[in-house]
Length: 154
Image (tube, rainbow, N blue to C red):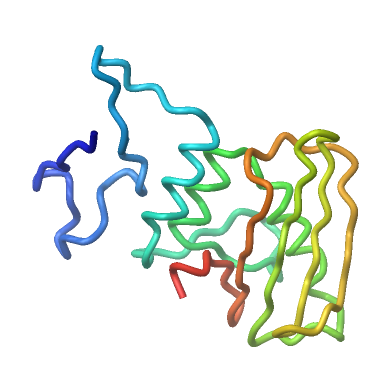
């Protein structure tokens, strides 16, 4: 069952709920508002269709900024480490600064992951992550002109 979002909680544009997309989509019949971490992360990804602001997540000046959706994802999933990985490769000359694709592949059974950075569809970097508790098996992010965003925000 889905809940209706009251108009008072929408931004003036009417598109984005206040609180950066963290509205509950499933409500159990007994009033339990809890969602699994995986459901929360999936809800953030599905609901992020644009941004109202860009956010700094690092004090390092050359690190990219992030959108509302990526910030909500990092807050809920605790994956600022992934943003640090992406930011740390921005000094590399092989990467196209205008458009990059970053893919996270997680082995949920072994709790390990691999981060891959692409110029469009050409693989440039691969980094193995020895431990992660990220809730999804796969995630794709874009980095466009210094801003990390979800594909749905493109």
